[in-house]
Image (cartoon, rainbow, N blue to C red; front, side):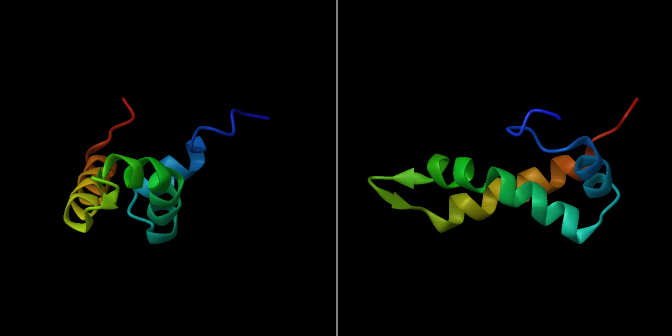
Length: 66
């Protein structure tokens, strides 16, 4: 049993190997935090949401297990 607040290690490994399902799992895991971060005056800013999602995807592909 692991911490349910963390993305499973296997999912991160699969996501860094460009598996679309794993990338979606990571995005889903952080979706509430992303939405909260994009609130402006009580409304979600879709441009900011897209930007955060894209930066997360980029970070996944640059992540290295050294």
